[in-house]
Structure formats: C-alpha cells, structure tokens
Image 1 (cartoon, helix red, strand yellow):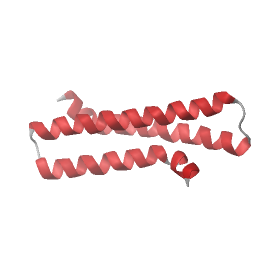
Image 2 (tube, rainbow, N blue to C red):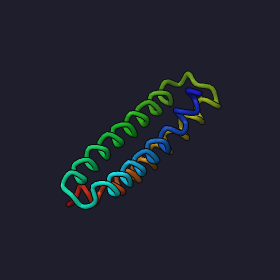
Image 3 (cartoon, rainbow, N blue to C red):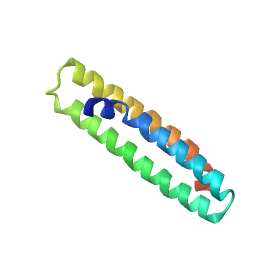
Image 4 (tube, rainbow, N blue to C red):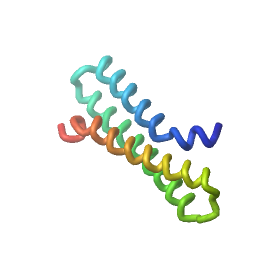
Length: 97
C-alpha cells in the first residue's frame, strides 16, 4: 500500500487540489476569501509535490535500489513533476489576481 501511495502520490495531490479548488469556487464564488484559500491550498499542494520529488530523487541517488524500485521512483518523480505543473497552472489565476 505504501508503494502505491508513493507511486500515485502526485496524482493524488493533483486530484485533491482540483476538487478543493472546485469546492472553494462553488461555495465562496468570487470573494477575497476564495483567493486566499486558493493560494494556501495551492502552496500546500506544491510543497507536497516538492516533497515527493525530493523523496524520488533521494531513492534514485541512493543507488541501492533494484530495477523495480528504481522504475517506481522514476515514475513517481515524473508524476509528481506533472502534478506540480498542473497544480501551479490551476492555481495561477488566484496567484496573479
């Protein structure tokens, strides 16, 4: 279970960010509070993606991984990087406003 959570961690962060922003936009509409909450959630998700990327890089740099663990670390890093870009893209309007 832990391996799957690490492997899909980036997608989980992206999904949580998407749904939380959708909920905030539905409840608070176009208020200042909605922008502040969006910025807070976006920064928290970017930090989570950064932590996943650091963990994947450490596993790859350690060199003590077998082929499957190395592949999982590479793929988890790729998904975390994709999630980082997607979270930034979704939160960009609130960050620029």
